Length: 325
Ligand SMILES: [Zn+2]
Image 1 (cartoon, helix red, strand yellow):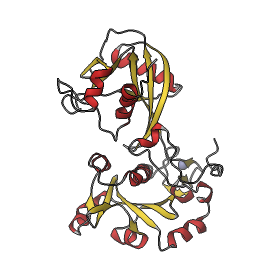
Image 2 (spheres, protein in one colour):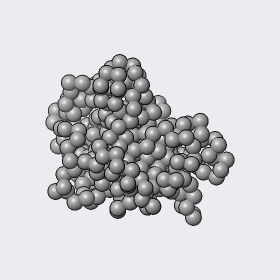
Image 3 (cartoon, helix red, strand yellow):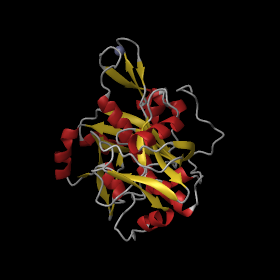
Image 4 (cartoon, helix red, strand yellow):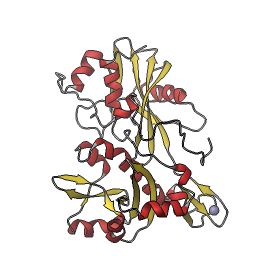
């Protein structure tokens, strides 16, 4: 699809549709992106000059927050954002309820000094887990973090090695030396629940909290469909053949720039052969067990991922909505 295609004006601007994805952390994003205006520098400058314009400030890959009464906010006026530290990049994220929202990148090295001025530097995962910001703010902030982190890592052309410069309102980097254009990347990751009758397959990595089990997951590789990636990863990690694959929901996962594609897979056999490098353990759980894990009531202390993660919602779909094959 053309990168510069206009917004589909048939869609109501900023509406949240009732699909499953919109209930997941980082997925709820009401920003109207105005992609058709990104090429017009004068439009962007005019939006930036509006008194109501605000910017997130990202130090490397860590959002800067400030106190707003009892709560936190990641929003700064454009003047405040520009005065905190030397600005490395700025991008127009879009407008939210008419307010232009930008993201500003500053150097990681500024964090300690900013903390001394009463500001907070809190990594995005902790912001989500601790519920420090409203759901409506988490999606746009994740977008800003992913985009700024991409700028930070792509200062040089992957084609010829020359320095690149931000273009198109912060949504592209251009190389003047060879003419290459580079776009922010999104890396698809399949995350799937293999089900067989009343049971589902969950695994745990050594880095997980004790007792926590989750869906299997892995990056989609070049030349693969989502369905093929689901079947390959389930076979590689657990030795289970899967047949039909069905899409359930997706989640932007800005660590640093993934899109989690949540699927249900029909398991064709039951004997596990666990890849000890990928997983510490895997096993089958009944629907009732997973329900108890989601409620934190499993008799053996097993737990499920928290609601900000898509795995939680895939498990809920299996337990509460009867999703199966
Ligand atoms: Zn180049």
